Image (cartoon, rainbow, N blue to C red; front, side, top):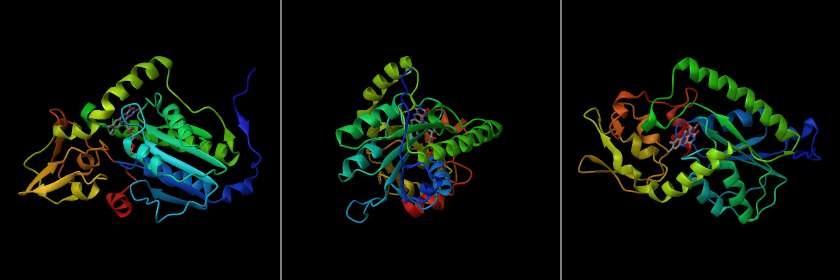
Length: 277
Ligand SMILES: Cc1cc2nc3c(=O)[nH]c(=O)nc-3n(C[C@H](O)[C@H](O)[C@H](O)COP(=O)(O)O)c2cc1C
């Protein structure tokens, strides 16, 4: 039987202390939480926001590189693609990815693998971690019992991922069923050019007290205050940080969000994202 898995030379426990750099992107903290959980177990790991990272300021000297980010519309978010564009040529020992999603990783990690290949980068392994959904236009994150179940499963998965990283396991990336990859990849390609203007559906109800948190949180500086009104400027990334973190729950998207619960990872605080973004 063909074995698609391979275990690298670096398989001793001492390799757990090899310096790791994890680059992450996160709207509501799931990916930041996952990056922190990985870092805790890997040890000697620095965590850098893809939003904050500047090729001119940060050297990458780690042999272990991780990319941790959410799945957006069944594919790789624009921010992650732009981050990859900026990466200098490099050949670390091992690059891994963790795509956080709400149950439909679809073709995301295959897409990442292909994009990286065009840049001369080798994705050694890629895992899907399922977390509560932050895609509020389709509903809330589910009951707290369901969320806790997902967090418990995510913790176990992350420990397994760390074990495989420490063994430098190289394996095909995790992916969804074929039908999903065909249909949803087509939808991703169709939607992708329209993402910047999807912010046209945001609106603000009477609870907005103009605290400006949404402006500070937006990774693409897409929200401004004009004549005491919030204005989205059509370069949205759809991370949904603005609507999910609004302390007044005054931001809305389309018709249904007034009825839906807001979500952010319970162990991530807004200051964690502000500090790094
Ligand atoms: C615009 C958008 C699109 C999304 N598309 C998908 C998707 O295609 N498949 C999926 O399983 N989850 C999808 N999600 C859910 C997120 O991937 C998931 O909740 C993730 O854990 C959020 O991570 P974050 O808190 O780090 O941003 C989407 C979320 C957003 C905001």
